[in-house]
Image (cartoon, helix red, strand yellow):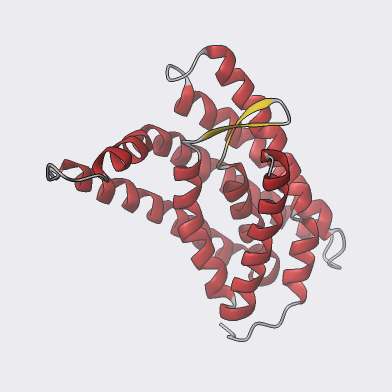
Length: 227
């Protein structure tokens, strides 16, 4: 299967899994997704792939799902709950960085086969996490504030597609402007960093458009577990 076909399929799978999580666990299911999605996005971003002839990082989809989740929480449960979701993601990422850096200090046995892989993955995480933490906090709080402002501008609940896409597209631009230089300048050639910036933002915008039917779907779902 080509990267392009796999990427499109993966978008759908991620959004379906979010929907299932909400159906099974209600609001808690959305908070769960924020927690592990923040960690997975920062692991996946260490892998570079080629999509449609462009250099890109793998974590764009998972990171994009976080905006769908915070927008869904803001739409159904309000601004304070969406702020809580952002704080959960922040705490989860910080905790992961601290715990895994300590884990890497342990001396492996001579027959250990996992340390090198862990060291490669989580050795990059502190720099990536620094960029991600700064970008995450700024862009996510911008996103939920824009979302609520647009929602309050149209109190009759119209234009969900506008507040979902508008808030995400703007906040994702700020996120990419902050994250890519911190995470990749000096690691890759400048031309690759520039390519990663443009393709990262382009793919984030595509993911934002793709999540629109799902926020409508999530809003209509009655969870099995109310919370």
